[in-house]
Image 1 (tube, rainbow, N blue to C red):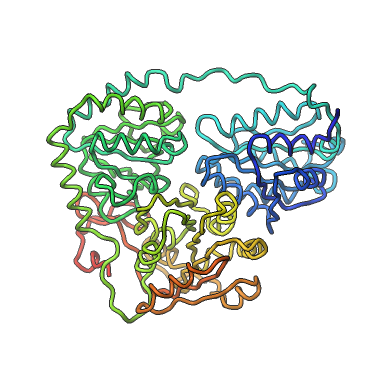
Image 2: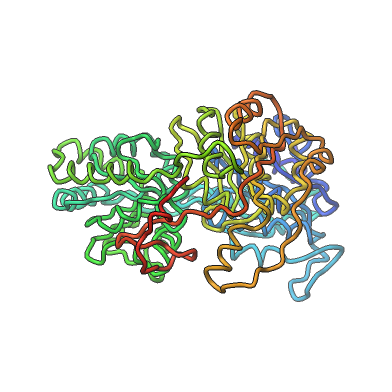
Length: 579
């Protein structure tokens, strides 16, 4: 029996466990659009923009670790999807974009565009994917799907792209006669794990102030449980990257929060005093080690474990002991070795020192009952009323700083954000993907009054599907974090900004319930009322426009500047006033 290529693609993906696709239909993808809509068990969610469709697939994949799928049309539609896909590339997320294309007889790589809305998008996509191909022959469809899925999920996950011309979509094939991809050459990702673990344990026994830096590679390796057990056995402090903040509950005696230039106040003190740093599944990005890459003591030994060799030899980042290996296999080997080793006395004293720093530097202090809402206080009170079934989806700018310095994830909660790329406006569409990926969760979006405008059209998607997404807009009168950047880096004058929207009118236009939070003295009750209601809501949080973002401390007693570079002055009492 023969089937259309378009139908084969839909059934292939559904057989892999894909039950949701994020799409925006078009003539160039019309056969695929129809096939996906008619595939039993596969739901096509209609986005309002192709960039948002790719971000929805990214949000779902970030939450579950499974393959996210977006379907877009040819030409402008495909190009729009590129802007959303780059977030998946930067953060290592398994996403497949399937794009329609003009008929093969009209395709011409030697011209700027071809046919009707034809464009060679694959050549552009190759720079931000692990695999990208045009399916030129119907009989090659299984081979390309096999290759795309394997590349998306193997090793460090990442996005892939298949471009399928109209005539190929409509062609019929015999599924039983299709050839699959050849088996991939075996990669020794776990070779030497036990030997490496023994070396690291020897280094740990010799160190007085060891530190683990935990990144999202741990979750990608499906090693969250083993990692938590390892930390319990080693009993040494853990500082996380942004994508690792939900690996350990913040009330753990071993968790010391997010480090880096956008992290909590005190982890820089721990990082700068450590004599052995073991980074597990963390890329040690500039945002973590600082613009001057001076986050660690020059005399400290830095170990980095990553499955992606490019992350072990980055410009400006010192790694003394690079380990290219599946971090999950190494964690298991370390657990086995740690079971036979007693905790050194020096480590106990070091852990106590770190605990004292944690206690001395809370993000949220006491607030007077009057005055505008402090955004740190708001995030703290919001989290206090959430549970294990809540997912935080965070945008860039002030929202990114405030949540990273405040959220504690004490109940196995999850966070989704654009960490490496800081993709402004990504939160609302990613929240849609998260809501469909985990339908029992209540999804909480934290976004600024400026960032929300970049994908504001997807409020209509939230409304159409009646998703239980609460969109909290931190209204601080514009681009507050950009104003701080300008003051720190150029000195002014202030740049022009768009006028702040009337969010009550926005909510009405998108048929969303609207609330305003503006009073500190009723904040707890107001938050509780929002969370108690089923379905979507747009909630405007009126924040203090003069509030400054907190700057992390350096080991030498100074502060990190806005761009992460060093600042030589000592911290004043006013700068440490967290209220």
